[in-house]
Amino acid sequence: MDDQKILIHARFSPNGSVVEISERPTSLTAQEWFDYLANHAGTTYQALAGGRGIYRLAAAQLADFKAPFDSKAA
Image (cartoon, rainbow, N blue to C red; front, side, top):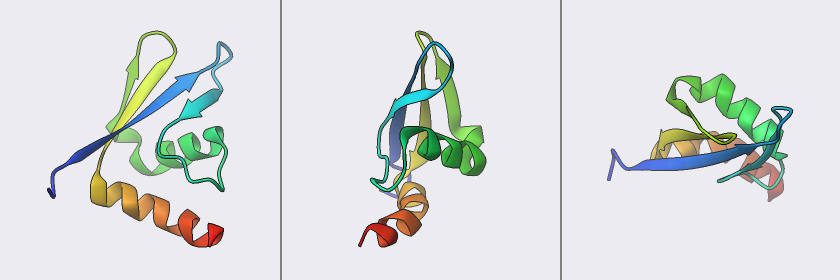
């Protein structure tokens, strides 16, 4: 289970802004979550065709990234 990867899917508008991204904390917009991941896990990103992309993160790493935002919502 330690090496389980979570795929975070992102979809972009024609102008390059993020319109949808999975695993997003409710306290962040889609663009804010993408920017956060780009700054903290940019090497795990893979661009795809059709205005899409994915991050491949370990489940524990994703939990660590989401923790500060989840505590703000509580």
